[in-house]
Image (cartoon, rainbow, N blue to C red; front, side, top):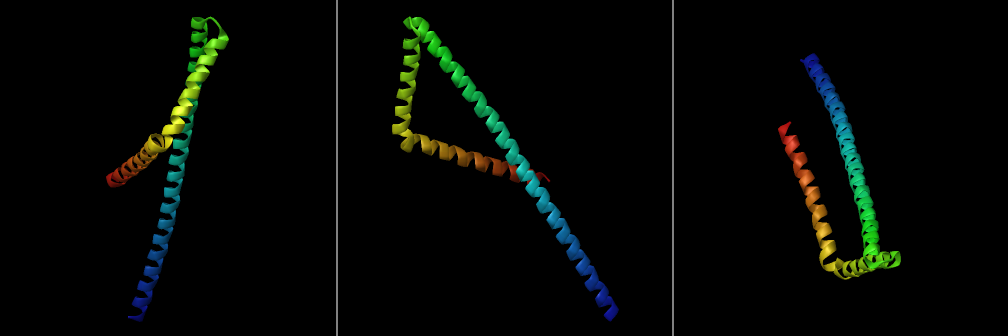
Length: 126
């Protein structure tokens, strides 16, 4: 009887060690997956932002050159584009608290919860 108890205690200790090792490995793999997803998201968002910035810059120069041709001088064309951006900056400055910041916050929260829901669906499939 005593020998049987000792053997069962040893089995329980071995099972606990196995469970703990499996849990540590799962946690490590989970953290690696999260880090990889974060890195991939960061890289893809950076590429998209850089492409938008380049398109914006080339579009601005194209518009300035077009207006220069229409208005008869580089100064007038680039000056008009500058005035457009100044007007846009003033509009953004006065509407940022009421409209723009709320839209950005809501978009970020929506994106976070969409990703969270996608992860939960993936976990349920497994």
